[in-house]
Length: 245
Image (cartoon, rainbow, N blue to C red; front, side):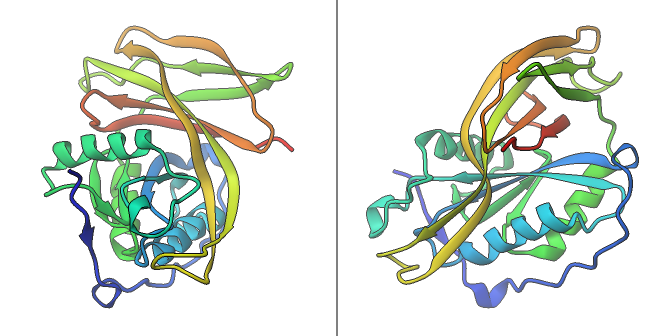
């Protein structure tokens, strides 16, 4: 049985982000920020708002924050079935629980580049983790819209890092809004960004092998490609193609 840990908002405030002048994409290091959340959890809306702020304002110099909102399903039996939830998101979070040796999955949980985890509404922890992740060695991913499909190129892993890593592709709805009728968030209108609809492995690379392939595009969905070490380890690269209209 999945263990649910409930965190009091009184313990974890949200600090205001300081917006910096926008930099060119070439000068920003991509950092993947995953939020495990649920519309059935009253502690989650502040974390959802933080994820949206990181996505929209890109407040950290030197980092391009690429976000994924992954809705878990273990809150669904407590009064509100989150329409964005999936067993796949729960399974991914359970793997992180083993990786980070937490007592079990909880919401809201933020994971930055597969390197650190913390309560998802803690803005100071998020900014610190993103800064640290942006200084790590990374490989490169390029995604381009090519005749209605996505042309993806992934370079080999950086030397002296992982021996092998998996390349993942995620399709995420650009935004989602829901009026919650029951449960802990009853009566609230909740808003989300980059809501994962599908996340799948598409290949592997190592420090000598690259990857090239074409992927479908979905209207209204972001395409996010990232490279992650096995066992839900560090993320060695990430890139996003914005949603088409």
